[in-house]
Image 1 (cartoon, rainbow, N blue to C red):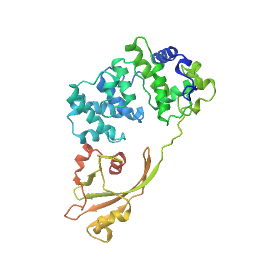
Image 2: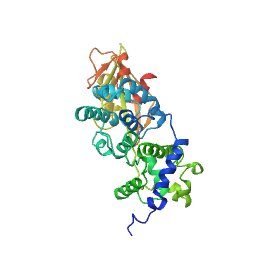
Image 3: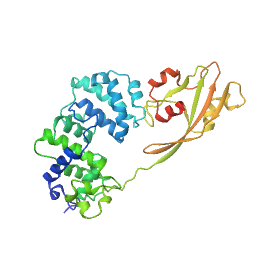
Image 4: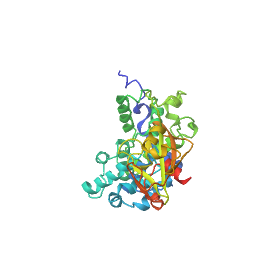
Length: 361
């Protein structure tokens, strides 16, 4: 017996029983009132799935209707400038999602006649759509028998199966994909697949929580191997931890007599890629070195004020932001890449959330 065969399999817990229990539970206890539910429109489902990646539902509830109002269909989105898309996305984080959103819409229009591919396999060929997202769209819109496996669903299934193998090992994650596929419904797929897919999402988000699962409310409690063994909290097993880093960014907040602010576009990769931002420096001296008039603090050309540092937490690193305010009175612009942006235009510019917050204070 191989190491993969030693753990509980989908057949051990009863394939049809898992699907039936989840479908019944979702019908009566699951979430039904979210604005992206009760539709088979692949554009709306796709948009919600991308927004929900590593983002709380509460945040997406604010952005989803606003985004739809501006880009009601894939054709409108495909024709939009990237800056408009990033401006509406600003604050949701993981900005590569917004750039891929635009690329995906453009590819749907250029190569698929404005229609999303009707299979999970076809959907995976589009920018920004991975295996789990493709399966969710295909299940919700086309009733395809395709398994999802996002973070919440991994937790549900590894507990049900008591799947003890390390998911940081690719072979183990592939095996879990196989078992997740075995558990899918077989009957009445147009009805059962959307229910089952949403049910797994709902269980992971509201019942089978990471630290305080409500096992008494779970429809899978009687067949959950982790619950029966009394050690559900040990699943999922993943030993490889994300390494966090820390950086200090010194931000030049330059404004002129007209209230304009000097902004530059961030590089196409890295933190806040493609967004507008105050010029960033590694330390205070580096900032002052680029502004010799400011470095001589007695200069009449500019007044400098250092604001308290602010911690901004990203998934993989902590950013210590040090805003340095400069009232720019010199007739020429700062000797930096960028442009002056008028106050009326700021609302339409894609700005990182902490940068926009600075400007609103």
